[in-house]
Image (cartoon, rainbow, N blue to C red; front, side):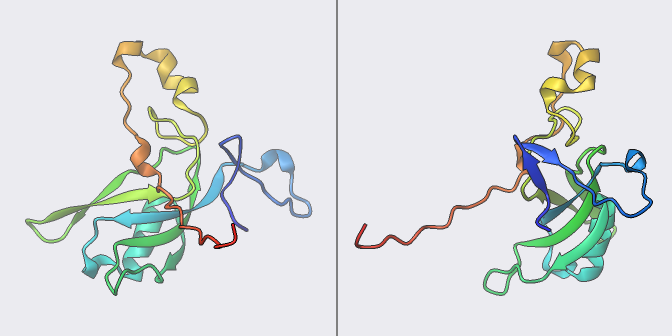
Length: 162
């Protein structure tokens, strides 16, 4: 419960071993995340679309319909299981009709350290295997901090006695 978990800003993946399960054969690469999907038209914020987005990002788990602001949803909120060894997805092109294209943008909640070069959760750009094969001046950062949801601090109520 409460995944994802982190230690020193690194993703921590745990698995409860079942009877007769060989611990050496368990791939520790799957973790659950809440993802916000932004820049969608209101007509696209449906559970069928949430499932499609979830399966595009990894494996769809849950659709949160409680996110709304005065009756108008700002983003779609889904829970997915994703593979940390695969690059994070940034956006998805959606064809509305023959002439209209919309790009849905993904933002991951509680996103920790990830590589800005290859987009994987398993390391930072300092330890990226691609970096060792590319001349430093030609390194391209294809991912950026915009994938991380910025948590807004709630204002604490102050006691008049403090």
